[in-house]
Length: 178
Figure 1 (cartoon, one colour):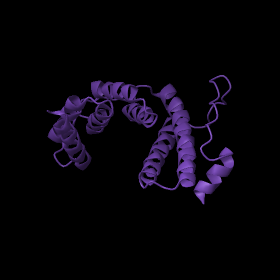
Figure 2 (cartoon, rainbow, N blue to C red; figure 1 turned 180 degrees about the vertical axis):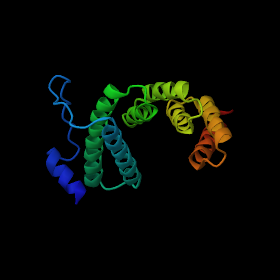
Figure 3 (cartoon, helix red, strand yellow; figure 1 turned 135 degrees about the vertical axis):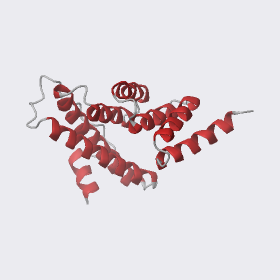
């Protein structure tokens, strides 16, 4: 039902997302840092859920609904991050969410740069290292992705996502070797 409602609101399935208002046009938000982080985190979780649904290869109309909803949550996440960044641009939580936002938009280089900024502040961040590995994999920089996965596993040998990513990266590297 949620998917049908989103399609009705957006006008048509797979429609182009509306242009975001400029900073001058946008009304000031009525929430602060913690609420902005909470909203951005909730949108990020919803994006994960939508991605899992898209991986099930739904029929075309459902796929379009999911893409419309994804666009909505990306927009919501971006708006919340703008508020959070105004109040605390160097907050690690905000930077990690911004990196995730870039990743969701396919801006892997920007996501990688943002994760590297997090690591300058918090060198032991498993999340930033794992996210950097994901970005590097998407960018085709497999040796670097492998090194980041191994760094995560040195910090936390039980990090299951890093274990799985390392296996996938090693398989891709094995295919490259003559």
